[in-house]
Length: 156
Ligand SMILES: [Fe+2]
Ligand SMILES: [Fe+2]
Image (cartoon, rainbow, N blue to C red; front, side):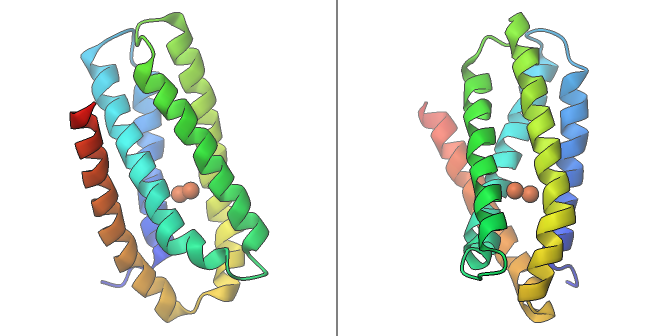
């Protein structure tokens, strides 16, 4: 595997951008909306948790990247709050799509910022070797997070 952590994160972002567009096209309390949003919600949360555990954990340790990493983690928490809210909310209510529009805007901003600003800074503190190792750790942790979310959903 030649991918490094930047490639892995970008790959997930592309998937999230596509899912966001698909959810935007859905109507009311449809199976499509539930299914697509469910997929987006799980993947975004697992992605963010894996980023925090393997990527941001190290960036928070380095002076050059600390502030930016703290900002990104804060944005994760904000996005997660809206995701939780949307999962509880009536999918057919007029407020659902409005709230989703806010989430979509926040996520798009967050992904662009990671790709443009965070990666540029992170490139200064992470070696090529470490970036490759991180891609594998990311995959492992993300799978673990997905399993945890699946169990949580069953228990609810
Ligand atoms: Fe993120
Ligand atoms: Fe990300």
